[in-house]
Each structure stands twice: as C-alpha cells, then as structure tokens.
Image (cartoon, rainbow, N blue to C red):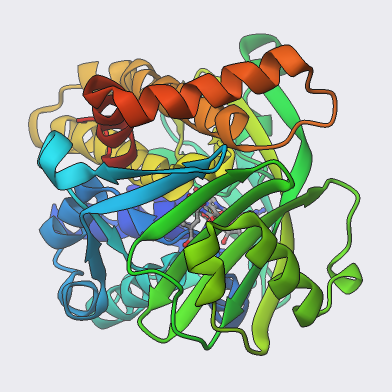
Length: 391
Ligand code: FAD
Ligand code: DHB
C-alpha cells in the first residue's frame, strides 16, 4: 500500500510528536511511524525538567493546558558537594525558571492533541527502511499489521532515538561520531511519597551522585549513581533508600519519606554526537543524533530545540520556496547541541564519583563547589545553562 505526505516522521517520542503537531499548526502534512505500541511509549519514565524554551514551545503549539495546570515552576535548585550546599537561584541570577513536568505527560498530551486533529500515527510499525534520501522523492518502507506499506514524502524527519535506523541511513563515510561513555549508570525510582525538598537537590557525595526530583507534590523521582554493570535486582527498596539517605545533606536525609517504589530502572550515561544532522532530504532530531548524560537535564530539551529549528526551516521551504534554512539546519542545531554537551559533561564530572579519580581530581571537584559558593558569576553560568540557552 502506498501513502503520500509532505514530511514522513520516524519515531513517536517527544521529538517526532512535537514536530508533527507544529507542522500541522503551520498547515504542513505529516505521518508518524512508531515501532512500539502507544501503551509501551507511555510506560517509559524519562526526563522531568523543562527549560523555559521548551515550555514556550509547548505553549506556542497550544498543547500546554495540562502542563500549565499541573506542572511545577521551579525558580532554583541546590547543589550539594564536599559537605556544602549551594543554592542556585535561577530567577535572581538569570531571570528564568524551569518547569517540572514529566516527559511521559508531554507525550500523552501530544498524542491526545494529534488524535483530535486527525494526524495519522502508525503504532507497531516494524522494519522501517529509508530510501532515496538523496532524491526529490524519499520514502519510508515499513510493515504494519502484517501489510507492507510505503510512505512517499518530500522530507524524512529521523526522530527515532539512539537505536533507530535514521542515523545509520547516512552513509558512514559522510558521518562523524563523537562519543564518551561514563563508567557508571543511574538507578532511578519513582515512589508515591512526598518529595524530600520543594526544589531539586543534586548531590556530588563521595559515595556517589544522588538526585532528588519529583513529578508532582506526592510523587517523587530519585536517582543514585551505580556501577555500570549493576542490576535493578541487586537493589531492594530499603537498600535504595538507605544509600540515598547517606548521599544527601543531613537535614534532607532526616526528613526523607520512604515507601514502595512504583518503578525502578538503570540507565547508562553517555555523551554522543553524530554530525551532520542532515543528509539529502533526511533531517535528524533528538536522540537520533545526540545523547547527553542526564545530569544537566538536557536530553528532552535538546530534542525540542532541534524540532524548533527544523520546523522553522520547513516553514520557510513550504511558504517561500526557501531551502536555505534547511541547508543550515544541521549547523544551527549542532551549535546548541555542543553547548548542552559541554554543560552536561561538566555537571557529570563535577558531581560523580569516578573509579579512577586521583587526589588531584578530587581537589578540582572540591574547588568547583567552592567556586560556585563564592562566585555569583559561577552560579550565574550554571543557571544560564540549566534554564536553557537561547535558540
Ligand atoms: P525517544 O524518546 O527515544 O523517541 C524515539 C522514538 O522512536 C521511540 O518512541 C522509539 O520507539 C521510536 N523508534 C525507534 N526505532 C524505531 C523504528 N525503527 N521505527 C519506528 N520508530 C522507532 N533525559 C533527561 O533529561 N532526564 C532523564 O532522566 C532521562 N532519563 C532517560 C532514561 C532513559 C532510559 C533514556 C533512554 C533516556 C532518558 N533521557 C533523560 C533522555 C530523554 O528522555 C531523551 O533525550 C528524549 O526521550 C529524546 O526524545 P526523542 O523523541 O528524540 O527520542
Ligand atoms: C530528572 C532527571 C534529570 O536527569 C535531571 O537532571 C533532573 C530531573 C527527573 O527525572 O526528574
């Protein structure tokens, strides 16, 4: 069966869905092809912190009603290391805030809106293959409900995450990859308990990193650094709570509310960039092109800034026949990507315990927190990057 659209989107995560919605609002047709079921996509617990630019994008796409009702605006966070707590007052330092609203909820809101608008989404679409990307009529082949389908389009948006086929469709000799694998992962739990603090706490304890986050006033999200080869089954809920408490400032540890975990998983940490982010009529967005370690809370936010640039470029093409912006897409997106890479790497090295770390590096780590404590400019730099650089 043959189908035709303007923009064929592979991947129904936040990047693919937001792109589909923004294109619809601009009068541009798209079809989304997602390998998983909707239930599966909505069961994945991932990011929770939205930069203000992401909040504004969701507002501009008119998919903000629930986020504005249920999301929590945070004007600051605490960094704890070397026995010292430093408050980073985003609002005072850079006049901006972040919003706490889970990626799962954004995805749910986007699906609901796209359903209402009648945008076609194929779930359970298998064996996606990209063809003729260097021609005027690229296509995506896939299997759905046992039927072979072909989607012809003007452009393909590869929004299929780190393991999807889009990035691999760029010939290897035209692609360059940059990668750093960290020797640890994050064990995360979700628990129906009152969050330990009204704002996030990032702890660079000598036992290892810990993070106190939340989804709402009665749902907490906590993470601790674990060895890369650790397994969820090694961690009972009690063991998790005990270790978390040891890594927090004493005052926070004393009021930590514990309970049964409703989700528990381990995610590895990686920095990865594939350049360029476009080839022929293929444009990559989000995790398909880059991965950041979660410490700077940038993964989802970068996916949405890529979508911002690509949507703008596609509008210039369809409205004015101007393909200049499309040819500049990769450069524009990558500039912001590398800033977030640097920030996420810095936060990760500053706050984690590295197995091979020497006394020299420990002193550098101690000096980092001292610098934050004593320098307004140091705190301002952190706040500027954390709340999001401009697009
Ligand atoms: P994804 O959300 O990965 O969406 C890609 C979609 O493409 C998926 O739905 C996938 O099923 C689909 N797909 C893949 N292959 C195919 C195919 N062949 N055909 C069709 N569809 C396909 N970021 C943070 O900031 N904080 C966090 O705590 C955090 N935790 C994370 C935990 C995990 C386990 C992972 C993997 C990521 C985490 N991230 C986190 C990163 C953040 O969630 C991502 O940056 C964000 O999801 C990127 O959105 P995306 O749409 O580009 O990719
Ligand atoms: C969350 C995840 C992050 O990676 C982060 O830096 C802050 C918060 C979260 O899941 O809530």
